[in-house]
Image (cartoon, rainbow, N blue to C red; front, side):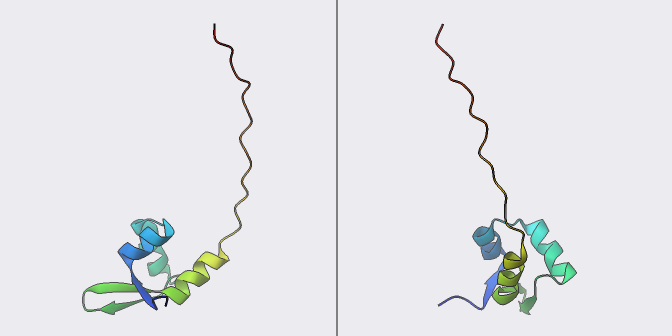
Length: 71
């Protein structure tokens, strides 16, 4: 069963999005969070919506370099 809320530490580990970016998303209202005592918990539904709205990555393979012959 997937959690409804997740800590900021777990969110950054799960998504690879840093703490600074996460707090920016929270302050802009893009991510929704609740407070449980001192803990800030991110609403996973808003997190999934944010991730789903990100553009698709366009990745191209690097150009191959010809192999050098040993001198």
